Image (cartoon, rainbow over all chains, first blue to last red; front, side, top):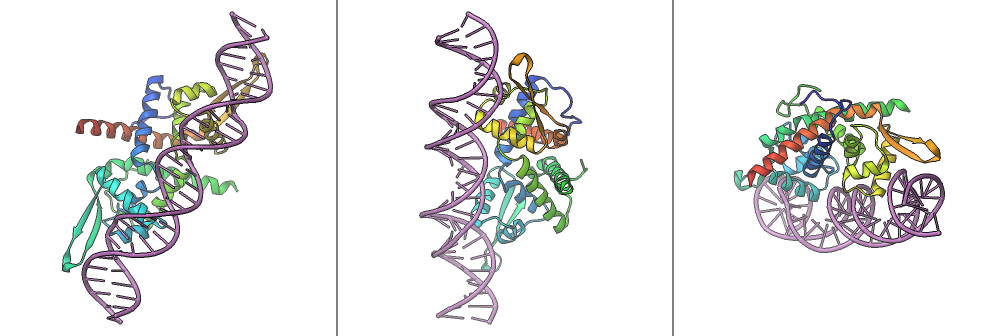
Length: 122
Length: 122
DNA sequence: GTTAGCGCTAACCTTAAAGTAACTGCCTGA
DNA sequence: TCAGGCAGTTACTTTAAGGTTAGCGCTAAC
C-alpha cells in the first residue's frame, strides 16, 4: 500500500481517478455480505450451512446468490465431493481473494476504532 | 496498518470480530456516494454545486442527505459565509476523515488493479 | 415410514437507497 | 424586470438489495 495520506494535496485528475476506482471497487465487493463471506472463509473452507451459521443473519437466498457472484468473479470455488454417495459441498477461497487483504484489514481496523470511539462518547 | 494476510490462519473468534467490525464500517461509510464525497473534498473545500459537478451523477437530493449524514458523523463541516450579503456555503473535511485514509487508498488500489485485470481478460 | 439434515431454489414481499422533476428564497447582473 | 446561479427542499417514483416462506431431491438415522 502507498504511504499516502488524505491530507496530501492531489491533482484534480488524480481525484477523479480515485473516485472512479473506489466506485469500481464498491461495484464488485460492495453490498452487505460479500466481504463478510470472504472473511468467513478465510479460516478454512466451509459448507453452505456452516457459512450461514457463521454469518449470523444471512438468508439462504442471499448467501446462494452472493456465492455464485463471488465464484463468477474468481474469489471463491465451489467444491463438490460425493463421498459415500452423499452430497458434500464446500466453499473455498481462491488466490484472488488475497488481493483484498488490505481492503479487508483496513475496514476491520477502521470499524473497530470507530466503534470504540462511538461507545466512549456516551 | 497491520502486516496481516488473509492467508494467515485466524481463530474463530477473531474471524467473528472481523466480520462484525467490517459490518460496522459498511454501516457508516457504505453506500454509493459517502466515500466518494470525502474523496472529492480531499483536495480542498468545495461548494455544493462544485461537489455535484465533481461527483458526476449524484443528485442534489442524495448529495444533500449524504452531506448531512457525514456532518453528523464528524467527517465534514459545513461553513456558511455571508460575504457581501451573499450566501456562500462550503464543505470541508474534518480531521476524522483522515482516519479513512487506509480504507480509501486500499479501495482505490484494489479498484484500479481489478479494472486492469478485467480489461486484459477480453 | 416418518423425521431430520443438507444444499439449495422459486415465488413472493418489504425496505431502503437512489433517481427525477419541480419548485423555493435569495442574490446578481444584463 | 427578467433570466440565471446558488443551495438546497419536497413529493413522488424506480430500482435493487435483501428478507420470508415454502418446498424439492437426496440421504441417513430412528
